[in-house]
Image (cartoon, rainbow, N blue to C red; front, side):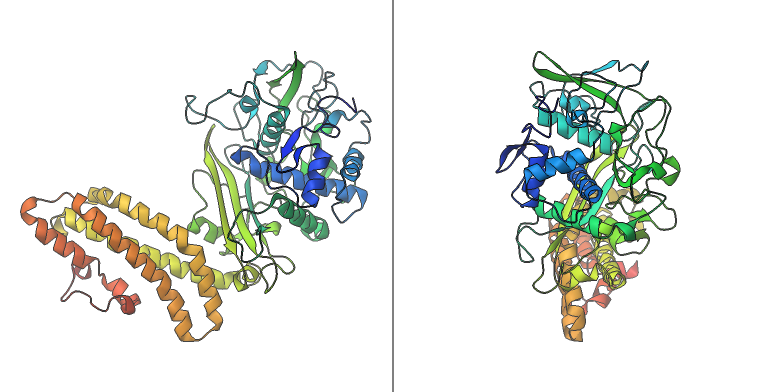
Length: 532
C-alpha cells in the first residue's frame, strides 16, 4: 500500500507549475521553497479550499512534530505527514483508493457495517461541491477523462467546503448553517513586494505566511474547548458509526474535516466513486453557528456567528463592514504581522473569497484582491476606526453622486416636471446607477489608502485627497448622464426643456456644498434638485 499507484505520499499525482508532477510532500516542500506559481488543474472555486487545506495540514504536521519552520525537503514532509497517521503504516489515509472500506482513504472516512453508498459518482466534477441548474453555465459530469488530481481537488473542496444538500447530506462545521458559505478573509504577501503590480499572491509565500502565523500564535488564538495536544486533526482517519458525531473537545483547533460519506474505486484503470448519506453531521457544532475558530473566518461579535456571503459580493460596503466597522471580529490571518506594510517591508494584498450559497444552490464564486501597503497596511491592525471613518465618508460621497444622477435622469423621463416623477421611473436610471456603483467600487480602496496616507499631512493635502475621489465620481457620473439622457422616455414636445432641467439637476445643492471646488460654474438660479 505504501507504494500504491494512488498514494499521495509516494506518487506524483499533483501538477504544480513550473515544477511538474509532485507528490503531496513534494507540493509542501516546493511551497516552502516558494517554487510554485500555480496549480493548472485547480478550478477557480477550489483554490481557497486547497490553500486552507494545505495550511491546516502543514500546521498540524509541524505542531505534532514540535517544529516551527516549514522544511524544504520532500522526504522531511513525507515523514511529517506519516507522523499524523502512525496507526496506518500502509498509508491508507493518503491513498485515493483503498478497497477495504473499513479503512480510511484520502479524505474518505471508513464506511461502517450496514451503511450503503448507493449513488454513483462517475466523474470528479460530479463529486465537486458546485450546484448547477439545468446543466447549463457550468456543465455537470463532463470530466470523463479526469486525472487523479481532479479527484483530489474535488475531494478537498467537497469535504472542507460543502453545505447542506438535502436529507442526509450534511455540511461542514465551519459554516453558519447549511445554506451559508465558508469565507476566506486574509492578508497575503504581494508577489513582488510592496510595489508589485501583480496583485495575485504567490502560493508558496502565502502558505508560509499563514503557517508561520498559526504556529506562532496557537495559544493566543486558541478558542472553545479544543485540546492543545492530542486532538484529532485528520477527521477522516476515525471511524464514523452511523449517528455518531465528533465534539470540538476531541478535535485539534486546525482540524481538517470531512462532511460526506464518499469512496473512490478503480475499475479498468478508470477512477470513479460512490457516495451516500449520514444520519447526523460528522461534527456536533450546529449551535456554534460556524464560529469554531477558523482563522480565515470573520465572526460577528454580538451574534457569535461566522460570516455568510449569501448572494452578495465582496464590494466596498461588505469589506468596510468586515474590516473596519468593529461589528465583526477580524480573522487572525487578516491582521498585519511583523513588518508587513511597513517602510521597506513586504506589501500585502487583502484576499476575500467565498462560494456564495443559497437554499440548495450556489450563487457563484466570489473573489477579490485589494493591494495595500505603507501606513494603510499597518492601520489594518490598530487604526481600523480611522479607516472606518474615512471609508464611511467616501461611501457617503458615492451615495450623493448616485442620488444626483438618478434624480436628474428620472426628471428627464418626467418631461422636466418634478411633480410628474413616478417611483417606477427610477428603473430607467438603474443601468447608469449600476455602472456608477461598479466604478466607485473599483476605485474605492486606492483612494481610501491615499486618503489615510494624507491624514498626517497638512489640511490642504487632506482636502486634496478627499477631492480626488469626488472628482473621479463627478467625471464618471457626468459621462454616464450624457450617455443615458437620450434613452430617457420623454414627450418630444418637451424634450429640450426636460433635458435642460435634468442637466441642471445634476448640480445638486448637496454636491455643491460638499465640494464647491468641483463646481466653479454651477448653473444660474435654483435647480430642480434644490427644489426637491
